[in-house]
Image (cartoon, rainbow, N blue to C red; front, side, top):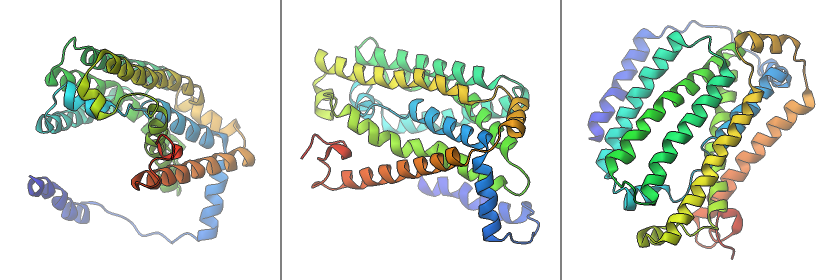
Length: 300
């Protein structure tokens, strides 16, 4: 199986070599490049989008319940092979949606798109999850199949954030803009689980509890998901950081001004979040420190 999956990856090597034409340019001086990056981060348009990317991704799915894998395994009875097959199908659907929206949805209002897709995703997922929690319908195909509809709002959201990166990037700084915004967007995937472990450690949702399948445990799991979906609702308010469309984004670039203190604070904040998540992850790996509150334990 792994060999079969590796074949397309290996095929990309000659494809990349023969079909991608990269013209040589004079290397930029490091000091000038850093100065350019700093000038970029000071602009309101840049740090405002950075804040949106971080807080939206943190609240809009970053606080996933620690009960999720146990619910899928013990209550929905999802088999691993079926799960992987549906993952492949969902990725294909996602790719088709991204291609479609990239062609026909370029002029949509970004704020409306973000809010509507976020709430739609939460509604679809909540129906499946709560039907599983309270034994209304526990079926692996229902658990795996219905969330395929979530690929529509998620694909729309992905293409909107990609549009923002394209519009923000200038000549010569495309790489740093893409790298900076995607790094900030991915940072909640490291911070979120750490905060989730800390929050959900107060609930009775470990594997033994899920196996017992009592009314108390079902309610405990439901509470964790209510917190999770509340995060989606809060994430909608981060859309105020977004311009409505690329014209408003360009206007913000021209008239938004520069704020060195705010830009520096955003950078330091993101760096501190990264250090915090790494520290907590390392502490949770060792038995002697995994009991610490900061690592999601009950306290040593």
